[in-house]
Amino acid sequence: MKLGLGLYRSLLNDANFRFARQAGATHIIAQLVDYVKGGDSPSLTQNYLDGWGATHNEGKLWTYDELLALRRQVESHGLTLAGIENFDPAHWYDVLLDGPKKAQQMEGLKATIRNIGRAGIPVMGYYFSLAGVWGWSSRPSGRGQAMSVEFNQETIDVHRPIPNGMVWNMAYDTEAPAGVVAPVSREEMWERLRFFLGELLPVAEESGVRLAAHPDDPPVAELRGTARLFYLPGEYERLLEVSDSPSNTFEFCMGTLQEMKESDIYAILDKYAAAGKIGYIHFRNVKGKVPHYREAFVDEGDIDMARALRILKKNNYDGVLIPDHTPEMSCKAPWHAGMAFALGYMKGAMQAIGVD
Image (cartoon, rainbow, N blue to C red):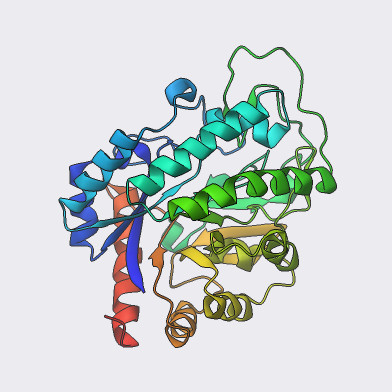
């Protein structure tokens, strides 16, 4: 298995590639859209109820040249670009909404996957959701009063509708007419996912790219009037029933799966690591379950992370682990300090079980 770091668009620079290497990482998962505000040192202290602002690039697709340039920049620091995480909502909002530009945007996604494969990037992570990550707030609830994100269903209106011009908690059209997104049933969401995978998986296979699906966080059955696909372990596992393509895999977020009701994180991890269906892993710990949980330092949550690593080793998992989120530490660079702690823990634990 490989130690990686996820970086938002604003963090894709030489200084942070050096940071990743100094902390022991060998691989990078890159996000080409900034879902977290904060420039060079992003903070989780924003309120996740308010949205992340407008999407980038005004719908401009990622080109082969820019993807190749990013890969070469990453490699110049002795790192490997292991994957891209999350499409820009401006690229696929009508695929999610079943809107009039669905076919046109699907052709854009196909072109993107071809460019990713041609650039030698093996994985594309995605999250098929309308509401996206929403309802979190930030509190000093981590160990030592570290700032951490928390979901408490009693403090929010989970039925608050999504305004027109927004999906995935980001605005793709700031001039959209007044109104809200119509309710969407689970059956409709599954139908939209089947269309998406039916169109994109053949292109991904031809391009040598694995698509990796993130589970729903928060894992509730319905959020903001729209059904959630992957809010229980059994619902997440249904993804593989849609297609047996080798390019159909999980973006295995351990924290999100642990938050779910009725979850046995160790059994799920064992099953799909053995089956080779994990694209990459968000090695993230949490305390509590839906309807009330918070993110935790990697060593203080409800998951025995060393046990999880032993399961991965037993199954010869050869993919990437990234810390994903972590509580912020009390210093001038709270995000970097939190990530350095997580990476150090992960590297030490991997060495302790004999993973080079």
